[in-house]
Length: 387
Image 1 (cartoon, rainbow, N blue to C red):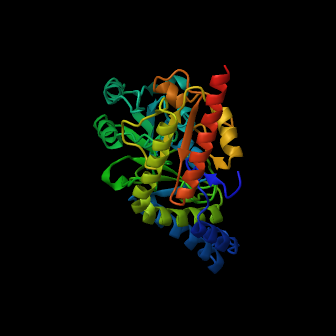
Image 2 (image 1 turned 90 degrees about the horizontal axis):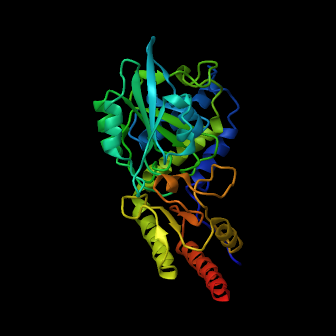
Image 3 (image 1 turned 60 degrees about the horizontal axis):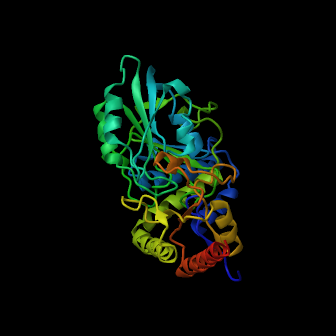
């Protein structure tokens, strides 16, 4: 299809923001190591610390409680550890509690052995069973160590928002620690770790318009931290070794500033998302939109149309100039059944497609999607008649 392409896959990776690009380019001219004490090193350190403050501001944290990583997967693997320290004292996390619908970087359990992981179910909308969580935490053997709970704030496929304030209350009452995967939520819904929504947050640069290769762990306090995943020269207060990725961190900081300012635009994004869903239902009344009955991110819709396979639809949309996905983009491009929908009780979900938009998405982009969907469904009708 002629004309500009429509990029509707922001949950996989958001386009690089102009401000983030400019910050990356400017940082490329700073040659020094941020750990050096000379003037050039201090200039590099200022870039890192400015970005740290910007990331902290996005989620209501203190700058000194932000630890930069190479991305969300490293952040998750660092936090999902049985071995922690409070000062010089060792602290043991004896069991990890996650849900069947979590992102693979959490679902894999990090540094916990399989027998130390409890996977909790979700309902047909993808919401965690709070009673099951409460029961599991109540049965936790505290003589072995503390319970560690990790869950997504918002699902990357469905956009469904978990009741994380209620989860935080249950975890706190049980004397546990809560890690909130805020990768999809950051910049799309307000987050304030100082209000007690979690003990630790996981963030990713490229999901909010920053460059790939940067992420962060954000803590509510610095009293207790996991054993480092990457040890080295003592960077990031000893929590993450290795020379800081100055350019990526600079871009992440710029993206965080932009995301903070852009929260007010989410209602406009919701209007476009709702138009996408209205088109899907109008053209395919038998379509199902997953998680529609509960609170979701304003930018995300995940739907299935009977008789339409994901791999076929993705190719058709791509040829029509529309980029979307069949769910998570973390499986080397594979298209197959969604573990999220399986957890929600759906057996056959090969036709599930995800549209995830951003603040730069235009009505023209949505129109391109509508045209491509109409053409796809016309071919489905023709095949049905031929049969």
